[in-house]
Image 1 (cartoon, rainbow, N blue to C red):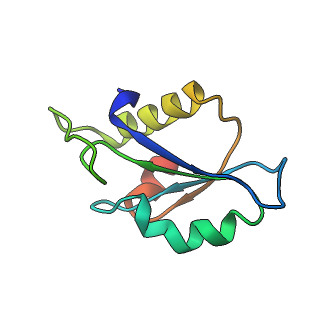
Image 2 (cartoon, helix red, strand yellow; image 1 turned 30 degrees about the horizontal axis):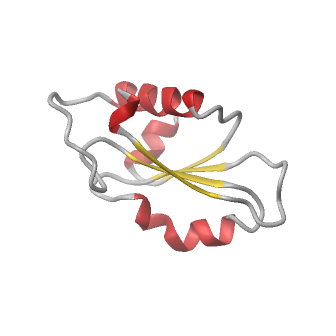
Length: 99
């Protein structure tokens, strides 16, 4: 399932050693909706944004997914990328995935 997700990482400026920010966007949007915020947040920590299946140029899933399934895919993707604790910022539907 995580192969259908796309992760974007923006390295930290001066804030190395702090937990990265994980930006989860609302439905119908891509990681680009957080471009300005990501630039600002990257001054203090790494920023990670994820495009979910069917959004931001990723392929649409064959079957509808539940919030829990999307959240599980996000967690698995972060585990595979060896990302530890994160500060989650969720907008709209992204807040549901964050919870």
